[in-house]
Image 1: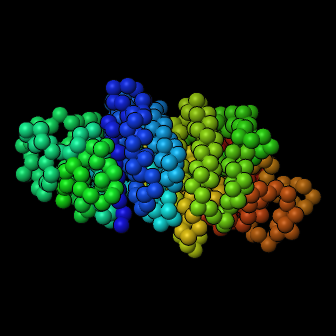
Image 2: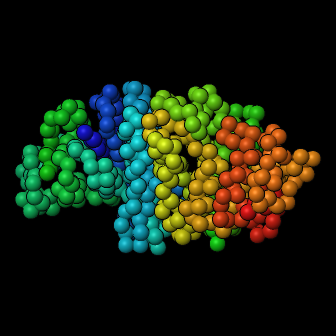
Length: 242
Length: 242
Protein backbone atom coordinates (compact mmCIF):
# COMPACT_ATOMS: atom_id res chain seq x y z
CA UNK A 1 0.00 0.00 0.00
CA UNK A 2 2.07 2.93 -1.31
CA UNK A 3 1.16 6.54 -0.68
CA UNK A 4 2.48 9.53 -2.62
CA UNK A 5 2.17 12.79 -0.70
CA UNK A 6 2.77 16.24 -2.14
CA UNK A 7 3.49 19.04 0.29
CA UNK A 8 2.68 22.22 -1.60
CA UNK A 9 5.37 24.89 -1.79
CA UNK A 10 2.78 27.41 -0.61
CA UNK A 11 2.14 25.24 2.48
CA UNK A 12 5.70 24.70 3.72
CA UNK A 13 7.18 28.06 2.71
CA UNK A 14 6.13 31.67 3.15
CA UNK A 15 5.52 32.51 -0.47
CA UNK A 16 6.06 36.24 -0.09
CA UNK A 17 9.40 36.00 1.73
CA UNK A 18 12.39 34.74 -0.27
CA UNK A 19 13.66 31.32 0.81
CA UNK A 20 11.70 31.28 4.05
CA UNK A 21 10.30 28.07 5.49
CA UNK A 22 6.81 28.21 7.06
CA UNK A 23 8.04 26.66 10.27
CA UNK A 24 4.57 26.08 11.75
CA UNK A 25 3.26 24.26 8.68
CA UNK A 26 6.41 22.26 8.07
CA UNK A 27 6.36 21.33 11.76
CA UNK A 28 2.74 20.15 11.49
CA UNK A 29 3.58 18.16 8.35
CA UNK A 30 6.59 16.34 9.80
CA UNK A 31 4.61 15.56 12.96
CA UNK A 32 1.76 14.10 10.90
CA UNK A 33 4.30 11.98 9.00
CA UNK A 34 6.11 10.66 12.10
CA UNK A 35 6.00 6.86 12.20
CA UNK A 36 4.35 6.51 8.78
CA UNK A 37 5.71 3.95 6.35
CA UNK A 38 5.58 3.28 2.64
CA UNK A 39 5.15 6.93 1.74
CA UNK A 40 6.95 9.01 -0.87
CA UNK A 41 7.08 12.72 -0.07
CA UNK A 42 7.32 15.33 -2.84
CA UNK A 43 7.46 19.01 -2.10
CA UNK A 44 7.00 22.08 -4.24
CA UNK A 45 9.20 25.13 -4.55
CA UNK A 46 7.30 27.97 -2.89
CA UNK A 47 9.53 30.92 -2.12
CA UNK A 48 12.69 28.87 -2.80
CA UNK A 49 12.37 27.70 -6.39
CA UNK A 50 9.86 29.96 -8.11
CA UNK A 51 11.75 33.17 -7.47
CA UNK A 52 14.94 31.88 -9.15
CA UNK A 53 13.02 30.23 -11.99
CA UNK A 54 11.13 33.45 -12.75
CA UNK A 55 14.30 35.55 -12.52
CA UNK A 56 16.01 33.41 -15.15
CA UNK A 57 12.92 33.04 -17.35
CA UNK A 58 12.81 29.26 -16.93
CA UNK A 59 9.50 27.40 -16.87
CA UNK A 60 8.19 23.92 -17.62
CA UNK A 61 8.42 24.77 -21.33
CA UNK A 62 10.93 27.67 -21.56
CA UNK A 63 14.44 26.28 -21.21
CA UNK A 64 17.88 27.66 -20.47
CA UNK A 65 21.45 26.71 -21.36
CA UNK A 66 22.77 29.02 -18.64
CA UNK A 67 24.44 26.63 -16.21
CA UNK A 68 24.53 29.31 -13.53
CA UNK A 69 20.73 29.61 -13.71
CA UNK A 70 20.37 25.84 -13.42
CA UNK A 71 22.62 25.74 -10.37
CA UNK A 72 20.78 28.70 -8.77
CA UNK A 73 17.32 27.10 -9.12
CA UNK A 74 18.59 23.66 -8.14
CA UNK A 75 20.59 24.99 -5.20
CA UNK A 76 17.56 26.81 -3.78
CA UNK A 77 15.42 23.68 -4.09
CA UNK A 78 18.12 21.63 -2.38
CA UNK A 79 18.14 24.04 0.55
CA UNK A 80 14.38 23.62 0.96
CA UNK A 81 14.73 19.85 0.54
CA UNK A 82 17.39 19.78 3.26
CA UNK A 83 14.97 21.59 5.61
CA UNK A 84 12.22 19.05 4.87
CA UNK A 85 14.53 16.03 5.24
CA UNK A 86 15.95 17.45 8.45
CA UNK A 87 12.46 18.13 9.83
CA UNK A 88 11.32 14.61 9.03
CA UNK A 89 14.42 12.94 10.45
CA UNK A 90 14.07 15.05 13.59
CA UNK A 91 10.74 13.29 14.15
CA UNK A 92 12.32 9.88 13.59
CA UNK A 93 11.21 9.45 9.98
CA UNK A 94 13.98 7.73 7.94
CA UNK A 95 13.98 10.37 5.21
CA UNK A 96 16.44 10.31 2.29
CA UNK A 97 16.79 13.14 -0.26
CA UNK A 98 16.21 12.45 -3.96
CA UNK A 99 17.03 15.32 -6.33
CA UNK A 100 15.32 15.19 -9.75
CA UNK A 101 18.19 16.94 -11.60
CA UNK A 102 20.30 13.88 -10.66
CA UNK A 103 17.89 11.40 -12.19
CA UNK A 104 15.28 12.82 -14.58
CA UNK A 105 15.31 14.39 -18.05
CA UNK A 106 13.00 15.33 -20.89
CA UNK A 107 13.42 14.29 -24.49
CA UNK A 108 13.04 16.69 -27.44
CA UNK A 109 9.27 16.11 -27.45
CA UNK A 110 9.08 17.16 -23.80
CA UNK A 111 8.33 13.66 -22.52
CA UNK A 112 9.53 13.12 -18.97
CA UNK A 113 11.94 10.25 -18.30
CA UNK A 114 12.13 9.64 -14.54
CA UNK A 115 13.58 6.25 -13.50
CA UNK A 116 12.25 5.02 -10.13
CA UNK A 117 13.99 1.72 -9.34
CA UNK A 118 15.96 3.40 -6.53
CA UNK A 119 12.78 4.94 -5.07
CA UNK A 120 11.16 1.51 -5.01
CA UNK A 121 14.23 0.07 -3.29
CA UNK A 122 14.20 2.91 -0.75
CA UNK A 123 10.57 2.08 0.11
CA UNK A 124 11.27 -1.65 0.28
CA UNK A 125 14.20 -1.03 2.64
CA UNK A 126 12.09 1.13 4.97
CA UNK A 127 13.33 4.57 3.93
CA UNK A 128 11.13 7.56 3.07
CA UNK A 129 12.24 9.19 -0.21
CA UNK A 130 11.81 12.97 -0.28
CA UNK A 131 11.70 14.46 -3.80
CA UNK A 132 10.92 17.96 -4.98
CA UNK A 133 10.10 20.19 -7.89
CA UNK A 134 13.39 20.96 -9.63
CA UNK A 135 15.10 22.03 -12.83
CA UNK A 136 16.01 19.09 -15.10
CA UNK A 137 17.81 18.75 -18.42
CA UNK A 138 15.67 18.88 -21.54
CA UNK A 139 16.91 17.78 -24.96
CA UNK A 140 17.35 20.77 -27.32
CA UNK A 141 16.17 23.24 -24.65
CA UNK A 142 18.94 22.97 -22.09
CA UNK A 143 17.00 22.70 -18.85
CA UNK A 144 13.37 23.27 -17.86
CA UNK A 145 11.29 23.11 -14.69
CA UNK A 146 9.84 19.84 -13.45
CA UNK A 147 6.96 20.85 -11.20
CA UNK A 148 6.14 18.99 -8.02
CA UNK A 149 2.68 18.31 -9.45
CA UNK A 150 4.08 16.67 -12.57
CA UNK A 151 6.39 14.59 -10.39
CA UNK A 152 3.44 13.46 -8.23
CA UNK A 153 1.65 12.13 -11.28
CA UNK A 154 4.78 10.49 -12.74
CA UNK A 155 5.69 8.78 -9.46
CA UNK A 156 2.14 7.72 -8.60
CA UNK A 157 1.94 6.00 -12.00
CA UNK A 158 5.42 4.47 -11.93
CA UNK A 159 5.04 3.19 -8.36
CA UNK A 160 1.42 2.13 -8.92
CA UNK A 161 0.50 4.09 -5.80
CA UNK A 162 -2.78 3.34 -4.01
CA UNK A 163 -3.34 6.81 -2.60
CA UNK A 164 -2.17 10.26 -3.64
CA UNK A 165 -2.46 13.29 -1.37
CA UNK A 166 -1.94 16.89 -2.42
CA UNK A 167 -1.58 19.05 0.67
CA UNK A 168 -2.36 22.61 -0.47
CA UNK A 169 -2.80 26.12 0.88
CA UNK A 170 -6.58 25.61 0.59
CA UNK A 171 -8.72 22.95 2.33
CA UNK A 172 -9.83 21.40 -0.99
CA UNK A 173 -11.06 22.29 -4.46
CA UNK A 174 -13.59 25.14 -4.24
CA UNK A 175 -16.81 25.38 -6.18
CA UNK A 176 -18.10 28.72 -7.56
CA UNK A 177 -19.54 29.72 -4.21
CA UNK A 178 -16.33 29.01 -2.32
CA UNK A 179 -17.41 25.70 -0.81
CA UNK A 180 -15.08 22.69 -0.88
CA UNK A 181 -16.25 20.11 -3.42
CA UNK A 182 -16.23 16.72 -1.70
CA UNK A 183 -15.88 14.55 -4.82
CA UNK A 184 -14.79 15.15 -8.42
CA UNK A 185 -15.01 12.35 -10.96
CA UNK A 186 -14.85 14.31 -14.22
CA UNK A 187 -13.24 17.55 -15.27
CA UNK A 188 -16.32 18.76 -17.15
CA UNK A 189 -18.40 18.79 -13.98
CA UNK A 190 -16.08 21.32 -12.35
CA UNK A 191 -14.55 23.13 -15.33
CA UNK A 192 -16.50 26.33 -14.76
CA UNK A 193 -15.56 26.57 -11.10
CA UNK A 194 -11.87 25.85 -11.78
CA UNK A 195 -11.61 28.24 -14.68
CA UNK A 196 -12.15 31.04 -12.20
CA UNK A 197 -9.66 29.82 -9.62
CA UNK A 198 -7.07 32.22 -8.27
CA UNK A 199 -4.92 29.45 -6.87
CA UNK A 200 -2.21 29.59 -9.49
CA UNK A 201 1.57 29.57 -9.42
CA UNK A 202 4.27 29.46 -12.11
CA UNK A 203 4.03 25.70 -12.38
CA UNK A 204 0.25 25.35 -12.73
CA UNK A 205 -2.89 26.02 -10.73
CA UNK A 206 -5.76 23.96 -9.37
CA UNK A 207 -7.34 23.21 -12.76
CA UNK A 208 -4.15 21.52 -13.94
CA UNK A 209 -3.82 19.59 -10.68
CA UNK A 210 -7.37 18.24 -10.93
CA UNK A 211 -7.00 17.33 -14.59
CA UNK A 212 -3.82 15.34 -13.90
CA UNK A 213 -5.12 13.66 -10.73
CA UNK A 214 -8.20 12.46 -12.62
CA UNK A 215 -5.92 10.58 -15.00
CA UNK A 216 -4.40 8.49 -12.21
CA UNK A 217 -5.56 5.03 -11.18
CA UNK A 218 -4.97 5.97 -7.55
CA UNK A 219 -7.51 7.64 -5.26
CA UNK A 220 -6.38 11.25 -4.97
CA UNK A 221 -7.19 13.92 -2.40
CA UNK A 222 -6.64 17.65 -2.27
CA UNK A 223 -6.70 19.04 1.28
CA UNK A 224 -5.15 21.65 3.56
CA UNK A 225 -2.55 21.12 6.27
CA UNK A 226 -5.38 20.42 8.76
CA UNK A 227 -6.44 17.43 6.66
CA UNK A 228 -3.00 15.79 6.48
CA UNK A 229 -3.42 13.54 9.51
CA UNK A 230 -6.82 12.35 8.27
CA UNK A 231 -5.37 11.58 4.83
CA UNK A 232 -2.46 9.60 6.29
CA UNK A 233 -4.91 7.73 8.56
CA UNK A 234 -6.80 6.55 5.47
CA UNK A 235 -9.76 8.93 5.85
CA UNK A 236 -11.12 11.30 3.19
CA UNK A 237 -10.31 14.96 3.88
CA UNK A 238 -10.88 17.82 1.45
CA UNK A 239 -11.76 16.87 -2.11
CA UNK A 240 -11.63 13.31 -3.34
CA UNK A 241 -10.64 12.99 -7.01
CA UNK A 242 -11.01 9.68 -8.82
CA UNK B 1 34.11 11.66 -28.45
CA UNK B 2 33.13 11.25 -24.78
CA UNK B 3 35.67 11.29 -21.96
CA UNK B 4 35.08 10.00 -18.44
CA UNK B 5 37.48 11.48 -15.91
CA UNK B 6 37.89 10.31 -12.33
CA UNK B 7 39.47 12.71 -9.86
CA UNK B 8 40.73 10.54 -7.02
CA UNK B 9 39.60 11.42 -3.50
CA UNK B 10 43.25 11.29 -2.44
CA UNK B 11 44.07 13.89 -5.11
CA UNK B 12 41.44 16.55 -4.39
CA UNK B 13 41.27 16.15 -0.59
CA UNK B 14 43.83 15.97 2.18
CA UNK B 15 43.23 12.39 3.24
CA UNK B 16 44.54 12.83 6.77
CA UNK B 17 42.44 15.89 7.62
CA UNK B 18 38.67 15.41 7.97
CA UNK B 19 36.64 17.06 5.25
CA UNK B 20 39.51 19.16 3.92
CA UNK B 21 39.85 19.98 0.23
CA UNK B 22 43.37 19.91 -1.26
CA UNK B 23 43.00 23.41 -2.66
CA UNK B 24 46.16 23.28 -4.80
CA UNK B 25 45.24 20.01 -6.51
CA UNK B 26 41.56 20.89 -6.95
CA UNK B 27 42.69 24.22 -8.39
CA UNK B 28 45.01 22.48 -10.85
CA UNK B 29 42.23 20.07 -11.84
CA UNK B 30 39.59 22.73 -12.51
CA UNK B 31 42.15 24.77 -14.48
CA UNK B 32 43.00 21.76 -16.63
CA UNK B 33 39.28 21.19 -17.25
CA UNK B 34 38.49 24.81 -18.19
CA UNK B 35 37.00 25.00 -21.68
CA UNK B 36 36.83 21.20 -22.14
CA UNK B 37 33.68 19.68 -23.57
CA UNK B 38 32.01 16.30 -23.65
CA UNK B 39 33.55 15.19 -20.40
CA UNK B 40 31.92 13.51 -17.40
CA UNK B 41 33.71 14.14 -14.10
CA UNK B 42 33.52 11.65 -11.24
CA UNK B 43 35.27 12.24 -7.95
CA UNK B 44 36.09 10.00 -5.02
CA UNK B 45 35.47 10.55 -1.33
CA UNK B 46 38.89 11.12 0.22
CA UNK B 47 38.63 12.66 3.67
CA UNK B 48 34.93 13.47 3.16
CA UNK B 49 33.25 10.13 2.51
CA UNK B 50 35.56 7.42 3.81
CA UNK B 51 35.63 8.68 7.36
CA UNK B 52 31.84 8.57 7.72
CA UNK B 53 31.56 5.24 5.90
CA UNK B 54 34.15 3.64 8.17
CA UNK B 55 32.57 5.12 11.29
CA UNK B 56 29.22 3.55 10.43
CA UNK B 57 30.70 0.26 9.20
CA UNK B 58 29.34 0.73 5.68
CA UNK B 59 31.28 -0.57 2.66
CA UNK B 60 30.56 -1.68 -0.89
CA UNK B 61 29.26 -4.97 0.54
CA UNK B 62 28.35 -4.21 4.19
CA UNK B 63 25.05 -2.35 4.28
CA UNK B 64 23.14 -0.27 6.80
CA UNK B 65 19.48 0.48 7.48
CA UNK B 66 20.48 3.42 9.69
CA UNK B 67 19.07 6.40 7.83
CA UNK B 68 21.22 8.79 9.89
CA UNK B 69 24.37 6.98 8.68
CA UNK B 70 23.17 7.24 5.08
CA UNK B 71 22.51 10.96 5.43
CA UNK B 72 25.90 11.51 7.11
CA UNK B 73 27.90 9.79 4.36
CA UNK B 74 25.79 11.34 1.59
CA UNK B 75 25.92 14.80 3.16
CA UNK B 76 29.72 14.73 3.38
CA UNK B 77 29.99 13.66 -0.26
CA UNK B 78 27.60 16.42 -1.28
CA UNK B 79 29.79 19.00 0.47
CA UNK B 80 32.83 17.79 -1.48
CA UNK B 81 30.79 17.70 -4.69
CA UNK B 82 29.67 21.29 -4.10
CA UNK B 83 33.34 22.32 -3.78
CA UNK B 84 34.21 20.57 -7.06
CA UNK B 85 31.20 22.00 -8.93
CA UNK B 86 31.94 25.46 -7.57
CA UNK B 87 35.61 25.18 -8.54
CA UNK B 88 34.71 24.10 -12.07
CA UNK B 89 32.06 26.77 -12.56
CA UNK B 90 34.50 29.38 -11.25
CA UNK B 91 36.67 28.54 -14.27
CA UNK B 92 33.72 28.84 -16.64
CA UNK B 93 32.98 25.11 -16.94
CA UNK B 94 29.19 24.51 -17.08
CA UNK B 95 29.21 21.95 -14.27
CA UNK B 96 26.04 20.35 -12.91
CA UNK B 97 25.94 18.10 -9.83
CA UNK B 98 24.63 14.52 -10.12
CA UNK B 99 24.23 12.62 -6.85
CA UNK B 100 24.20 8.81 -7.14
CA UNK B 101 21.88 8.29 -4.12
CA UNK B 102 19.25 10.15 -6.19
CA UNK B 103 19.53 7.82 -9.17
CA UNK B 104 21.30 4.51 -8.56
CA UNK B 105 20.57 1.32 -6.62
CA UNK B 106 21.69 -2.26 -6.25
CA UNK B 107 19.48 -5.31 -6.47
CA UNK B 108 19.64 -8.22 -4.02
CA UNK B 109 22.46 -9.81 -6.05
CA UNK B 110 24.51 -6.63 -5.71
CA UNK B 111 24.14 -5.64 -9.37
CA UNK B 112 24.34 -1.91 -9.91
CA UNK B 113 21.44 -0.17 -11.63
CA UNK B 114 22.52 3.32 -12.69
CA UNK B 115 20.33 5.02 -15.34
CA UNK B 116 22.23 7.53 -17.49
CA UNK B 117 19.74 9.11 -19.91
CA UNK B 118 19.97 12.43 -18.02
CA UNK B 119 23.79 12.34 -18.10
CA UNK B 120 23.68 11.83 -21.87
CA UNK B 121 21.26 14.74 -22.21
CA UNK B 122 23.51 16.93 -20.04
CA UNK B 123 26.44 16.19 -22.37
CA UNK B 124 24.37 16.78 -25.48
CA UNK B 125 23.18 20.14 -24.11
CA UNK B 126 26.74 21.25 -23.35
CA UNK B 127 26.78 20.73 -19.58
CA UNK B 128 29.49 18.90 -17.63
CA UNK B 129 27.97 16.34 -15.23
CA UNK B 130 29.89 15.96 -11.95
CA UNK B 131 29.20 12.68 -10.12
CA UNK B 132 30.86 11.17 -7.08
CA UNK B 133 31.31 8.09 -4.97
CA UNK B 134 28.27 7.88 -2.69
CA UNK B 135 26.05 5.68 -0.56
CA UNK B 136 23.17 4.11 -2.52
CA UNK B 137 20.23 1.88 -1.60
CA UNK B 138 20.78 -1.85 -1.88
CA UNK B 139 17.94 -4.39 -1.85
CA UNK B 140 17.91 -6.42 1.38
CA UNK B 141 20.99 -4.62 2.75
CA UNK B 142 19.65 -1.10 3.21
CA UNK B 143 22.39 1.00 1.71
CA UNK B 144 25.99 0.33 0.64
CA UNK B 145 28.87 2.34 -0.82
CA UNK B 146 29.15 2.97 -4.54
CA UNK B 147 32.83 3.74 -5.12
CA UNK B 148 33.98 6.32 -7.60
CA UNK B 149 35.94 3.58 -9.38
CA UNK B 150 32.84 1.42 -9.84
CA UNK B 151 30.96 4.45 -11.13
CA UNK B 152 33.74 5.19 -13.66
CA UNK B 153 33.40 1.71 -15.12
CA UNK B 154 29.58 1.79 -15.12
CA UNK B 155 29.42 5.21 -16.80
CA UNK B 156 32.20 4.52 -19.31
CA UNK B 157 30.28 1.43 -20.44
CA UNK B 158 26.82 3.04 -20.44
CA UNK B 159 28.02 6.13 -22.30
CA UNK B 160 30.29 4.13 -24.62
CA UNK B 161 33.13 6.48 -23.68
CA UNK B 162 36.18 6.73 -25.92
CA UNK B 163 38.67 7.64 -23.22
CA UNK B 164 38.76 7.08 -19.47
CA UNK B 165 41.18 8.89 -17.18
CA UNK B 166 41.88 8.03 -13.56
CA UNK B 167 43.74 10.90 -11.92
CA UNK B 168 45.44 9.41 -8.85
CA UNK B 169 47.82 10.30 -6.04
CA UNK B 170 50.56 8.45 -7.97
CA UNK B 171 51.87 9.20 -11.50
CA UNK B 172 50.79 5.80 -12.86
CA UNK B 173 50.79 2.11 -12.00
CA UNK B 174 54.12 1.12 -10.45
CA UNK B 175 56.08 -2.04 -11.22
CA UNK B 176 57.98 -3.94 -8.51
CA UNK B 177 60.94 -1.57 -8.69
CA UNK B 178 58.78 1.55 -8.33
CA UNK B 179 58.84 2.57 -12.00
CA UNK B 180 55.64 3.62 -13.78
CA UNK B 181 54.48 0.90 -16.20
CA UNK B 182 53.72 2.58 -19.52
CA UNK B 183 51.26 0.00 -20.89
CA UNK B 184 49.18 -2.80 -19.35
CA UNK B 185 47.17 -5.10 -21.58
CA UNK B 186 46.58 -8.05 -19.26
CA UNK B 187 46.24 -8.43 -15.52
CA UNK B 188 48.47 -11.51 -15.37
CA UNK B 189 51.47 -9.53 -16.65
CA UNK B 190 51.30 -7.14 -13.69
CA UNK B 191 49.62 -9.27 -11.00
CA UNK B 192 52.80 -9.70 -8.95
CA UNK B 193 53.61 -6.01 -8.92
CA UNK B 194 50.06 -5.01 -8.01
CA UNK B 195 49.69 -7.61 -5.30
CA UNK B 196 52.29 -5.71 -3.34
CA UNK B 197 50.78 -2.26 -3.83
CA UNK B 198 50.23 -0.05 -0.82
CA UNK B 199 47.90 2.25 -2.71
CA UNK B 200 44.70 1.05 -1.12
CA UNK B 201 41.66 2.74 0.35
CA UNK B 202 38.34 1.50 1.75
CA UNK B 203 36.83 1.23 -1.71
CA UNK B 204 39.62 -0.69 -3.47
CA UNK B 205 43.24 -0.24 -4.43
CA UNK B 206 45.22 -0.15 -7.64
CA UNK B 207 44.82 -3.85 -8.46
CA UNK B 208 41.04 -3.50 -8.53
CA UNK B 209 41.26 -0.34 -10.65
CA UNK B 210 43.48 -2.03 -13.24
CA UNK B 211 41.33 -5.15 -13.36
CA UNK B 212 38.18 -3.08 -13.99
CA UNK B 213 39.79 -0.72 -16.51
CA UNK B 214 41.02 -3.71 -18.53
CA UNK B 215 37.41 -4.81 -18.96
CA UNK B 216 36.40 -1.56 -20.67
CA UNK B 217 36.28 -0.99 -24.42
CA UNK B 218 37.68 2.50 -23.87
CA UNK B 219 41.35 3.42 -23.72
CA UNK B 220 42.07 4.05 -20.04
CA UNK B 221 44.92 5.92 -18.36
CA UNK B 222 46.09 6.15 -14.76
CA UNK B 223 48.14 9.27 -14.06
CA UNK B 224 48.91 11.89 -11.44
CA UNK B 225 47.64 15.47 -11.30
CA UNK B 226 50.63 16.55 -13.42
CA UNK B 227 49.39 14.32 -16.24
CA UNK B 228 45.83 15.67 -16.34
CA UNK B 229 46.41 18.31 -19.00
CA UNK B 230 48.17 15.79 -21.24
CA UNK B 231 45.31 13.32 -20.83
CA UNK B 232 42.69 15.94 -21.68
CA UNK B 233 44.78 17.01 -24.71
CA UNK B 234 44.59 13.46 -26.06
CA UNK B 235 48.15 12.47 -25.13
CA UNK B 236 49.20 9.40 -23.12
CA UNK B 237 50.37 10.24 -19.60
CA UNK B 238 51.10 7.67 -16.87
CA UNK B 239 49.98 4.12 -17.53
CA UNK B 240 47.86 3.20 -20.53
CA UNK B 241 45.47 0.31 -19.85
CA UNK B 242 43.64 -1.35 -22.74
